[in-house]
Length: 277
Image 1 (cartoon, one colour):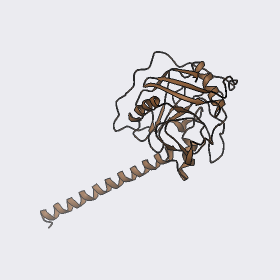
Image 2 (tube, helix red, strand yellow; image 1 turned 180 degrees about the vertical axis):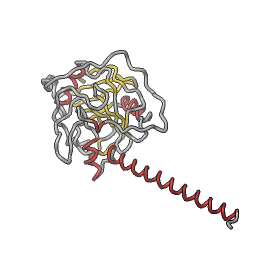
Image 3 (cartoon, rainbow, N blue to C red; image 1 turned 60 degrees about the vertical axis):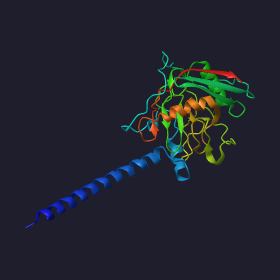
Image 4 (cartoon, rainbow, N blue to C red; image 1 turned 60 degrees about the horizontal axis):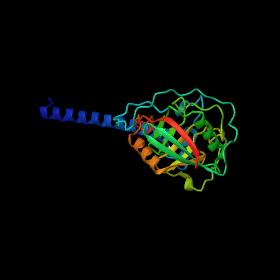
């Protein structure tokens, strides 16, 4: 006959084994989730570089389902530090061709994104990226960015806020595409896009070497030094005040809790202006 003490010890062992099994299952799920984040969000070094470049900044594409953040229930959500958007709707604008060159290629331009979170002035050197600066000068003049939301915040591996999509889901664009420019910028030392850099999203896939010269209107702002292969046109630098706004947005986090999703902050470009500096 089994004594009460033996029975208690047996039950305790069984309970311990069940706990161990549950913990191991949880660890496996965590490893799987971490691997998925590493593949999709990517710490872009060595082997990881091509993975992020393949899937990370796919902009201006109707087939860009991979750009949609994975759905998950966040464990917590930081308070929204931004104001409500101004009244108005995103204009439905599209063009078949890149706009004709109309800027001074030797000049510097300042584009000011007046957002719900604060003003974000961006200095753009037309001599380094004339096609990109000219396109933004055109798009701003047409009111293209007004009422558009910044749809993606990445806080793991790389540290960027992505904006410029009229659809707000990573698939929108102006209809035309732009050539890649300024990819040998001296600031990109060691394939690092330094904090404050503003660069273009595109469809380039380094594995197939397809998708060059596919920038449109989507761009990203770097809030912390980020290691990325030099495939994305760096065309602007955020001002100190703009960096403060970007940092505030980043601190609010993103919606999935996994390092890549819609920003918790309501980041909407109420109005954009541009002028020759």
